[in-house]
Length: 77
Image 1 (spheres, rainbow, N blue to C red):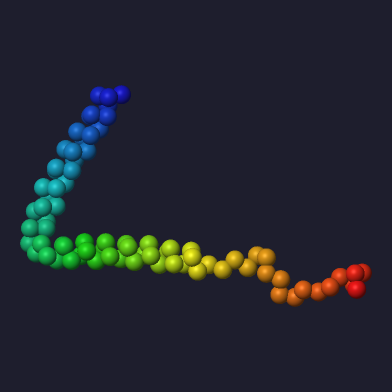
Image 2 (spheres, rainbow, N blue to C red):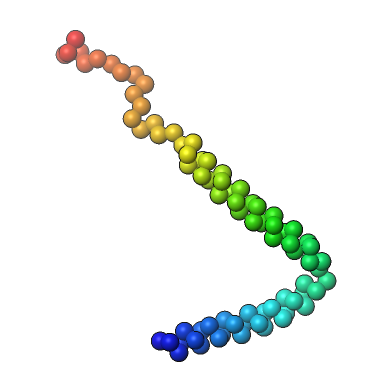
């Protein structure tokens, strides 16, 4: 079990190194600040999305026990 976990980790590291080299060549022409701004935009949009979800949960109105028309029972009147 321990050896298989070590092998899986090594395979993932090896794959990420191979992909990182290819992606590094692809992104060599892109300015670093563009990537930083995109990453910051993604992080900000993630937090805004979480805040909107939380506000939506808090603002949800439960109308299951709402009695709009309360009528008296004819027998009790």
